[in-house]
Image 1 (cartoon, rainbow, N blue to C red):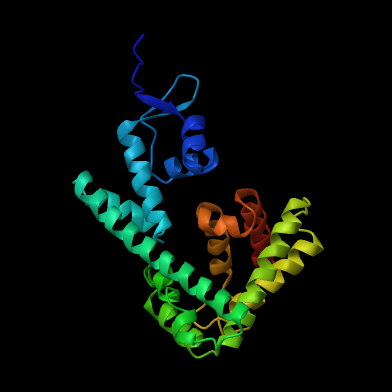
Image 2: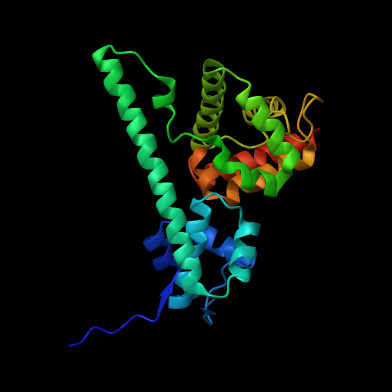
Length: 257
């Protein structure tokens, strides 16, 4: 008996195939980025092949660092789907090359340390480039924000950069652990984390509110929303539920400012 060709997939199937949560797919629908091809009488969302192509493009652009508004504009402006996919493929191959270089540089560092050799900075940081986020930062907060942050980062020594990265990693770990324990966003523990988060952000030049001792209220609230909407950031806090906890705690903190 011949296999019937699939013409549509349920939201649960799409979530399973892509690793994108149903909640995120519904968010994409709510912001007009990825409406389902149809909604059943029971409210279930269904996605046809063309909609899955659009989702693939969304995920490619997200993986390349574009924020959702920029992705929406790109999809609306590019009417030739095949040409757009070819462009996506080219960008993915560029990213693949960068990651290959990064992996090779780490491997060289391991080998050098194991053999007691001399570390060469030029070899250690091949493939590492914080400027990959320039477009996203500029899109969200303006060119001045990126330029200020870039000067600040480049002005630090490698040791200072490592200290800052370790501080950010500890903060993210503490957020994720608190979320996993079910800490309430308005609790003293969560608000202490929110205070640490605000202090961490306010130390970055270009951050709205930098120099005043705390980031701007609107910035904190918007940043929390981005943590939930953007899966790359959500992963930092243990997933969507962890990011939701961070967002809610930051909102409580911002309201008390």
